[in-house]
Amino acid sequence: MSLVKKFATVGGATLGSRLFGFIRETFMAAALGTGPVADAFNTAFRLPNTFRRLFAEGAFNSAFVPLFAKEIEANGMEGARRFSEEVFGVLFTVLLFLTIAMELTMPFIVSNLIAPGFANDPEKLGNTIVFATIMFPYLACMSLAAMMAGMLNSLHRYFAAAIAPVFLNIILIGILGYAWYVGQDPIAVGYGLSWGVMAAGLVQLAIVWVAVRNAGIKIGFRRPRLTSNVRRLLVLALPAAITGGITQINLLINTNIASAQAGAVSSLVYADRIYQLPLGVVGIAVATVLLPELARALRSGNLNEASNLQNRSVEFTLFLTLPAAAALLVMSEPIVRLLFERGEFSASSTVVVGHILAIYGLGLPAFVLIKAFIPGFFAREDTRTPMVFAGISVAVNVSLALTLFPRLGASGIATAEIVAGWVNAVLLFGMLVWRGHWGRDIPLLTRIPRLVIAAAGMAVALHFALQWLAYEVSSAAPLIVRATTLCALVAVAMVIYFAIAFGIGGANLGMIRRNMKRKAKAKAEPAPTPDADA
Image 1 (cartoon, rainbow, N blue to C red):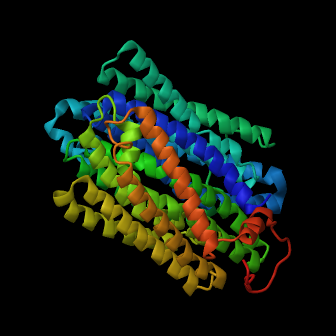
Image 2 (image 1 turned 180 degrees about the horizontal axis):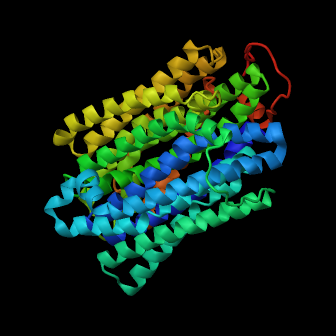
Image 3 (image 1 turned 135 degrees about the vertical axis):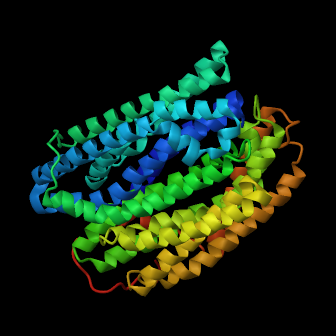
């Protein structure tokens, strides 16, 4: 299967999850707006989500996937099963003790570390503590699910792990739909959503567990022991845990800062939901597929294939994310108005969230590139370098957030995040080049500025089109008119972007065809010599 087809498999499943996420956030915006219950739920959900990304997406998978893939090659499926059981026993035990400790100390953690800004509103603070207590076991479910997802990815079975997150959104949509039908008050909605998150964790764990069994690996529970394999995993995972921990602590610090302003936490979450669509569909798909593919190429000594994987991944991500970034920058407010402005979500909330979303658009290429660059380190079992660069970017983020928030509010936090993202992306790329891990690809370097020009041309056209269609995208227009207008604008923008990109050489049919048909080469090759027409 070609690299792009693998990206499409993961990205397609992620797209389904993100679309259901839009529906969920639309319902939530109508039910809760940016009010106190929305702030409480979003702040509480940030806690298990932070640890989930730390244990699952950050530290664990970056270390586990290359070792699991190596175990398959060295000792076959039986050796991989033993290794996974050893890891499962240790991971389950750690998560169990962590969950118990967090549940017992939740009031202190929320009131002093996560949301001290809620201290002046005892009801909001109390709701945040209760919601977080209900939801925190979601962490254990999702971390174990992430381990199994890593196994599936290493076995080239991407779909189950990618589709499982959609069930969180399906369950929460059902809860919100029922709450609307019976007319529940916001507090009852918050409790329902919290229990729904917990239930979704169990469902997602069950899905990947069944998929792993169907893949031929039955995981049993072993008494936790620090075997040589587990010790090697911990050695690799610790720097990645610090990397992920720094990044996630950074998000908690931003939540801490934003909690001082009513509605700021929820405004950031709503904007993040839209911005996560292109980031998730493209960035997560690339990171999920690229790590095991790159690790496999490097283990076989195929440097040319490794270089080609990295270059084609960057080419693919920029080809799709540059127009998305331009569209978010130009038409953020109409998008927010269409998706969220109803019920408790006011016109003033649209302006705030739209401004934040436009800022996030400027950082979208950076965050997608980070996901394309980091596998270049993790596949070589280097988890320390990304840790150092993550620490630098967080220092930039926190200093800027503290400086800008008093003057710009939530928009200041968004600005700090995107500046830090670009700092991290530049550092990662510079180190790959400096170490000789990034093969020079002249065609790629000439295409990038042309893709930027194509995205800029599309943005200019959208700007004038929005001025011409000001009424059709305003709150005064009927919903069907707004939706039809935005869909038409997106379609026209895509035509403009692709026409310019292909017209000036930013992309060509040969590039697309080659990426669609590219097969991994089995034999090792010498230093990278990129195809002049790649």
